[in-house]
Length: 315
Image (cartoon, rainbow, N blue to C red; front, side, top):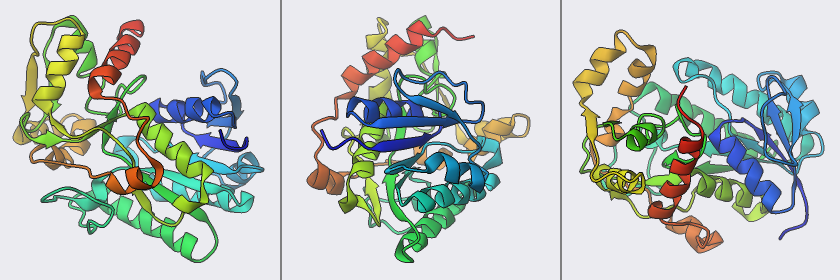
């Protein structure tokens, strides 16, 4: 275990909670920040009220931090607010001299042929991808200018405890599997797709938060090999005790049609391209540098995920 540090975590959703658990497991002091200050956090985590959009608040709450983890985002329908939120948290981390670890996705790459690596060119084909490119560049520019020490923790689609509405493989999949009803997914179910368990995402973020050698660049965090959605759903339904999966895959035209009436579907429609071709995430650079012994196979982490969904019935 490394020397105890203070890790400040913005975000109390599935990923933020997992980062708190992992940092606490490693013996660090952990401060979880939420707008209300009343979020239910892991045992031993300091709960603080704060506004991620207010630089004065972030400077106060990041004081003394060794690492600041960005696991928070605006509503999926309100991403135009994201750059200002990031800039505010940057002010807090920079004032503290802390490492800032930004949780990232693969939207920056757009449509790809072949595996995605850290060297894959940015070629966004969505509004959200373009926003992410600008945000990534702002972080790396701040690092190059000496204002900030930053690492970008990039992951594919993730799932796990408390990941309900923030991921395709959340409430639309795990609750139906438990009830032996059709899981609702996007795209082509026989295309390869990399996925990550949320605790593995958290492990990578805390590792980068502890170590200076990860700074100044993006990393593809360690995850299991890709598999098809069909194979993933077979594992999920089998672990839920069902004979075979029931699958309802929404085609692109249907998602766009629903987007006329349902705002969140309109936002998801522009990202559906990721589910219509092989989408393979190469994490060999991170594995070579930091290892991947912590990564468990999907067959195991699906069991843990189903246990959480079983213990937290759908409202």
